[in-house]
Length: 126
Image (cartoon, rainbow, N blue to C red; front, side):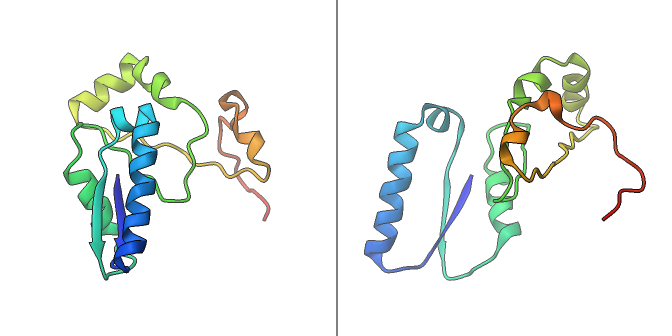
């Protein structure tokens, strides 16, 4: 994870760093699985650079790039790990796994992966 902190006054930066540290030490999943890379500078909206920092320093061969407004609402990781066909393709390095994104009007509708669309409708009316 790359986190950009604008070059703000020291007290504001320190407050953000304290909150981040608290989140890190109180979230077992985060402290176990997430590396945090802080970027402190005066440049805003450097999304590609921030993504590249996180990707470059990743300690895994599998990286998932998510936009900031993307919320993962199911545990698809376990489904991927249980699929020998998918894992074989990923390990060979000749495939990318594309995770479809669905936007629900009511977020509760996105909680159960069994209700997700399984086909793409042709001729959707807008």
